[in-house]
Length: 285
Image (cartoon, rainbow, N blue to C red):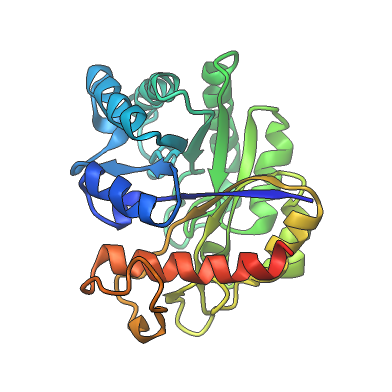
């Protein structure tokens, strides 16, 4: 049997770190996939500033599940040098944060062009990432994101199998695949299951690609989590709700920590947590 550990993109709750931790504690979550904090991306802070953020986390008993970096979330046609320097800075941040995972991407492909045209450049850049990361105790996590080279299961598999590195694994993001109009289950999951080391929890619908709470869309969240659990997956489920425009607040249960909050990030997050915990109750029997 598997073991799921909950984490979250806490900047969707609020930009303030204290508020982020306050809300997460109410939901019993003690891990953060840190992307934005106190109005800036984590990777834009100096190493001394990162040490101070780490001190604040330690005081409250929080840890990072991953550094939610933007590495690889630039155009493949952009120059690589400055971006590679940011990656090396991100490696140092992960070390300070005592964090094994760095979330990354495989570069935006020019609109209207075939991803295959840029495959070799994507692979070569990722090989440079791997070379710089080797021996540093980190795992580089590739997230499937719309518009990048790895936005389909096939291209994700191509990237991960070609790199064939112990320090590169895959993130499975349900909503992102739905928004690319590909089939999550069984097709995408079967192709990628041997590479999945981390999971992003958000769901979406095919009709207009809008994001919904987990299990309420077309992402087959329950089916895939059941398979992961039965196959012994032990790792993070990181909530990335993207529910800022969601109108289903009436579904929030009275015992939810977010029930009495006004509409906003903390209340939207409460809906996302409630939906996921309902699914996990059915799975973790």
